[in-house]
Structures are given as C-alpha cells and as structure tokens.
Image 1 (tube, helix red, strand yellow):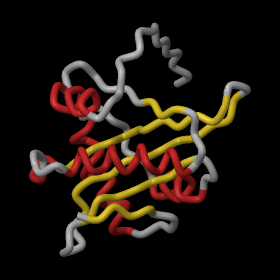
Image 2 (spheres, one colour):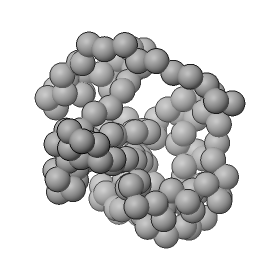
Image 3 (tube, one colour):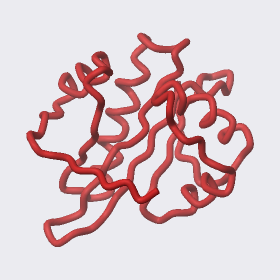
Image 4 (tube, helix red, strand yellow):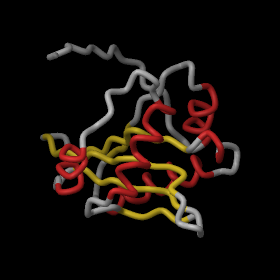
Length: 143
C-alpha cells in the first residue's frame, strides 16, 4: 500500500471518496466535484489516499492545519479504510503517516476525534500514542 498526497482533481479519486465516506459515516452528506476541487486547492487542507499496487484506492484521510497564538495545530479528519481491506494494518499506516506529515508541517500538536462506537479505531489511536483529551465539544449547526 502507498499513501499519496492528492493535489489535483481526478474522477477516480472523486468516486473513491463517494464510496469511502458512507463507510465512515452512513449519514454523511456526500461532497460535490466542485467541493473536492476546493479541498484539493486549499492551502490548509492536505488530502491523502491509500492505494494498492493495482491502483485500487482503499483508504483516505485529510489533515487540516491552522495557526493560532499558541502555535500551529493539525487535525486529522475522515480517516477511513475500505471495509474489504480492514484488518490489514492500513489504518495504522495512514494514521502514522498523518502524524509524521503533521510534524513536517511544524505543527505543535495533532488531534482527531472518533465516535465511541468505532471501537477498533479508538484502540488504534490509543496504541499510536494519542491520549484522550477530556473536554466538552460543542457543535452549533449552521444549516
């Protein structure tokens, strides 16, 4: 498996996103082509795919970065491995890659969230050294 940063739009990657996102969150609103193009040209969003030697896309993740007075922060989002490929260590490799990539951006920290129902994912994050941060997360829906 290879992890590749995607900077330009392709229909192949777009179709993979549409296939993978519902596996992460069944109620996810699927992005449009235009939205994916905007992500790929954003300075603060880094989008990656996991690809087998046969070019099949089997996973993806995004890293968002932002600067605040306490330093640059990185946030890992939308980590998903295709259901048919789980249990092969691809999630582990994706997250380790995201940590190293965040270091290369000089981020002071990297964070992520995971629903409690994603037991395997939560165990993976703990195994890789993430520490559960006790906080209240508030969400205000704008639409």
